[in-house]
Length: 165
Image (cartoon, rainbow, N blue to C red; front, side):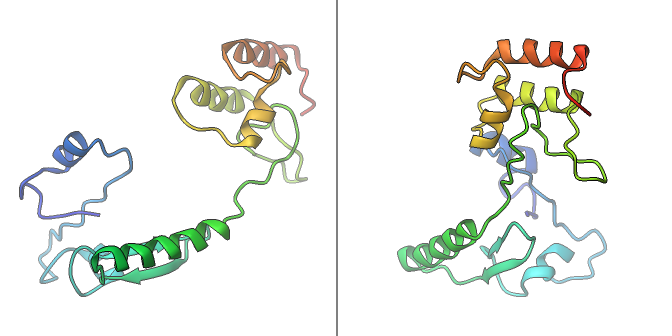
């Protein structure tokens, strides 16, 4: 979250100069309702920047503080972040070949369709690190290598109706 653009960087300037690959939310208050920042700033703090917030996989705030005192502050933030990651239970493998995007019917059966193919394509062509679920469910050729051949095989299996959904 950022604001006060142009001091010294614009929003795009932050992305370009620091190779940022995560979303930046503009928090400038266009209505001048707040003394500093916008509504986003006041959701988390009424103090100063930097303000550190850790939001877990359940979208719950597990840490919120403006205190940052060198290594001691870093250690506290790192410890809280480590606990949040340990408690993360997002990966639920269905163990179903081709179930890359983990979508399900109302009866909890996996839906394997072109969206899974697109997700697999994105994972293979980008430098994104894949988890064990994506690797196992995307290796449709069974050669323990996830590559373009898996994309062709997956597309062929979709066209031939090999997935039971």
